Image: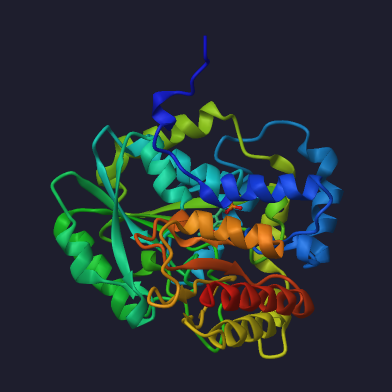
Length: 403
Ligand code: PLP
């Protein structure tokens, strides 16, 4: 008899590592070299982690052989508390939960909250783990639009129109993956006002809060809503280029009194997985308090800045391709003009491009974008490789146009 997966997984998708990646891996096994612009993992592209973080983890390895508190090492959580203090937010060590990356904590936060049929507002496009985690927890993801014609900022009217009595919370990914938008304070204040009016919890994914370009300023939404329950997520994977460590945190702030039971649920789930990887937790204090080498990468002349610049210019130079300039994070989310590229199935389109040009991208619908006219590019490769990949895309699209 066929062994089927759980019905809970029926509608759970995570296309970034889905069928398109499987096809790329199969091609690699056949000996092809694939340029992979699909995953925001800095290390394989030659980005180094800060030396002091590595030294910390290596030195502390012998002290990391036991389990620790389910919520994490005290020193690591204290460092997170201080990080938010600098932003004007005052929480306690008990409000911080360390996890095996933000990914684990997103799943925990949704599992602890949602009953079947509860709705969660999630941006479209989104980082698809959010939609997957809500679905897995029995919830119903409701996507609100981010407006490409307005810097990809959330459309507040669309959010309000989608709130129902079942809506429990709103997810804000800022800086955004995949669009690179960094939300101005008035937009965040608008979201807070809606949450306040409709009694919603705010879930703020701020893993790219230090990856900002051209003077963009990041506001942690938790600093704007100390009367509401706000759960903020962040970690070391991107800003400190140690995604493999699996080190992230969740911070509970605001109206905790009203959330005693939910917080007990979070404690329960944290206990059930015993604790997060202890070795990597030793890196948190040094990372947050140390030299912020990410700043050397995002300023003019820095590697990320220059790669973003080239990729953005080259994409916009392709006929029928337009792309908003990212203000933060590691991605571009270009649009293919449907009048020039009438794509019906964007996954098939990305697969065809992979087969033809040996470059791996991710289709827009993989980010819960409702149309088949976008794709995501990771701009982590060195400029030569990035240029090569985008030139191949330009060649592929030229052939597509002349069909
Ligand atoms: N949130 C966003 C917006 C991301 O882009 C990612 C990774 O790409 C994550 C969370 C997951 O990060 P972590 O490595 O901490 O699990």
